Every structure is written in structure tokens, then in C-alpha cells.
Length: 269
Image (cartoon, rainbow, N blue to C red; front, top):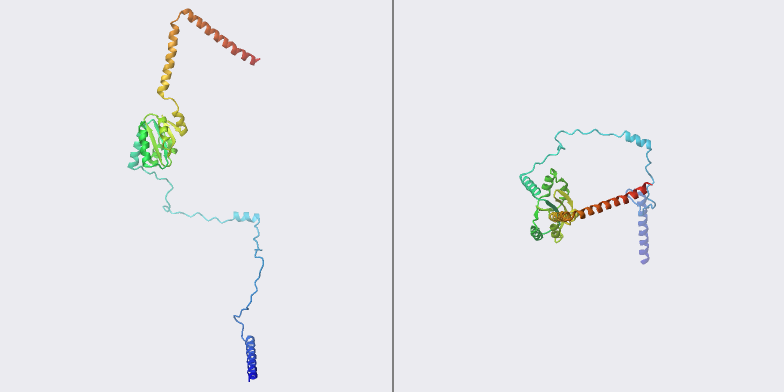
């Protein structure tokens, strides 16, 4: 019994294999793909390069290049290139008038850059400057540039860039202003106009080291007084003494002329 079952199993297996072989041979192979595919491995570099164009052909292409005609723009399509003169508003006119009064009444106008100083520091600075008769003025840079453009102070326009303030006084007080600014590191001096003269920051420092007009006038008067007093005392002496002094002066002048003439003669020889 067992032998018959094994025989039937083998026959059944053989029939299945025959049926599969016939199906493969008879059925069409549409849509059938192999189980394995061949993949090409190798260099992927581009071997085809564009040939350079001859120089004559390049020139010919450049000369014969098509240039499209300019498109006719209808009138009014674009805004005109002429600059429209903007009229000053009433506020700007008032600020310009005040600025004009400041320049007329002040002999010292200093431009200082304000580097983020708070309200308390500015109040302390104003109080210290007011002790010396110096006032702090705030004007917008646009108004100042518009005013300076048509005035004799036009060279001061480059100083008004960024947050700036003006220190003005009726008398030149550069030394007091610089001593006050040393206590405010956030304020930087850019330049100043003192007695209608534009000065840099270093020029203001040099100007502050000069003696005042009163001191110079006192020194001049004292020098002239001393000379006149010496002359008056000399004239009050005896005439013989005066003649002796004059003869000595003449001898000194002649000796100096002879000593100066000798080197000139030696150089000529």
C-alpha cells in the first residue's frame, strides 16, 4: 500500500513539471521580465564637448547680432525726470528763522555728536554749560542743511550727520566748553565756527590754548608803557650823556656792518 502511494506521488509530480514546461513554451512572453538585470558600471564622464567657435565667426555673429528697436513710450507712462522743488512748510520756515538768529547772535557755534545720552545726562550738561553762558540748541539736520545750503556757512553742512546738537554762545568760550565736555564721554566734538572761522576739533583745542584778548591787550599796553618810560627817563639826563650813547650806538652799527660785509667779500672771492 505504501509502495503504491509513493508511485502515485511521483507520477503526479512528473505531470506537474511537464505542464509547467508546456506552459512556458506555449504562452506568449508579454510583460515578462528576467529575474536578474545587468547593470553597466564604468566612467560617467562626458566625452562630447562643444567645439570652440572660430574667431572670424564670432566677429561675424557680433556684427550681425539683431538689435531690437527702442520701444516708443507713450507720454505720461513714466514720471518726469525733472526734480520737483519742494516748498518749505511753515514749521521749517520758523525753524530756519530761529536758526538764522542763532548764527547772527553767536560768535561760537560748536557741533557735537550725541552718542545715546539719556535725559538726565543732557540736563546735567545743560546746567554746567549755562554757568559759562553756553546754550544747547536742537535743530533737525534737514532744516540745518537746508539753511546752510544758501548761506555763508555752507562749509559746516558735512558736520550735521546723525544725532547732533549745537553749543552756542555770544562770546568765544572754547576752553570752558572743552572742560565741560571732558565730563561727558558720550558727547563728541565734531567742529566749530568761532568768529566766522570754521575749525576742526583739534583746531578748537589749539584755539582754547591761546590767551584771551584782554590779556594780549594788557601785555601790549604794558610793553608800550615801559618803552615810553625808558625814553622819557633817558631824555631827562644830561646832553653829554645822550651824545655819548648816540656815538656808542653809531660805532656798534658800523662794526656790525663791517663784520657782515667781510663774509660777503670772502664769499665773492
